[in-house]
Amino acid sequence: MRKPLSLGAAALLALSAAVLPVAATPAQAAPPSSLYSLVFSDEFNGTTVDTTKWNYRTDVKRESAQRPQNVTVGGGSLTINLKKEAFAGEQYTGGGLISKKKLRYGYYETRAKTSVGAGWHPAFWAMAGDGSTTAPADRRTEIDGFEFDMHQPRRIHHNVHGWYADGTKTSRGSAYDVGYDSSAAFHTYGFEWAESTVKFYVDGTLKYTANYSQTCCTEHDYLSVWLTAIAVDLAGMDDAALPAAVQFDYFRYYQKGNYTDNDGPTATRYSETGTWVTSSVHGHTLENTSRYSESPGATATWDAWLPSAGTYDVYIYKIANTNSDTHSKIDVTHNGGTSSQYLDYTTGTTGWVKLGTWSFAGGFNGSVKLTRGTTGYARADAVRFDRVS
Image (cartoon, rainbow, N blue to C red):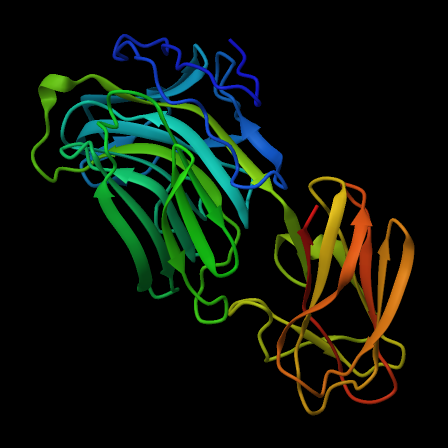
């Protein structure tokens, strides 16, 4: 059965003998702002996993090995079957899906029902990786939309971890009684990720906000979404409850703005003329690079991709330095034409500078172009488009 994005829907039974009937449950939630647009989703309305969107989780962690065979789609849900079976040196098997698409700031939402029985750890989270390991070399950000340890089915965990290359991390989070048994019915879980906050929602209600600075931490890379369940023996394994299952009704990702940077996945929308060099000065986050040039007339251009038509505030990240260009020309191309202004990069502080507010069409439309003046280094990092109407 297809689930219209604009309507609430009751949970449907997955095609698995391990799945129990589902009682009436809270309606589907929605993004925290009407300015958000849906840009990636899976409603799980088919009969097989869409492998153009998802990788299978295949690692071995804690008390279980994860198997593709445990993951099914049917009846309008993704089902992760949890079993007691010997595989890859473990006595239990779980599973999950990891999105192939890499995502960044925006609103992430799923609707899920956890399993019955102690010993399992279902989670909705985001981190780099393809599911073959939970410690990939490129992991930096980890955002846990929900984690449950099923000996405590009412206790939810929200976390933001910033992983460093040496395996250490910074963490902030919250754990509390969510007010219901997460295994008894479907509930909606979401998190809104921005430059300096992650806000966690349950059934459309804001429950916890994690704050951090974009220039202090590593928590700004591009992430895959993980919908998973593994065995974690914290209070014994309830074998009598097996086989069991965790179900996800859908996954949806929304954006209300976007960035174009000189590096990372959006660098395909960035271009230069003249000779540019990567600077030792980082860009708008700790691990983003910046660029500089003293070529006469050198340009840096950031093309936009926008989630929908609308009115956007446009910002450029200014790196202030005494040897920088005093008269960089900034041209913003939008629905009404091109608007120009000049910035002195030798004065003020490093940070986002608002260039103005303009109307843009959705998709690949609009741009910001920087042209070096006559003295000092032109500096380029990133531009940002924030939808305001």
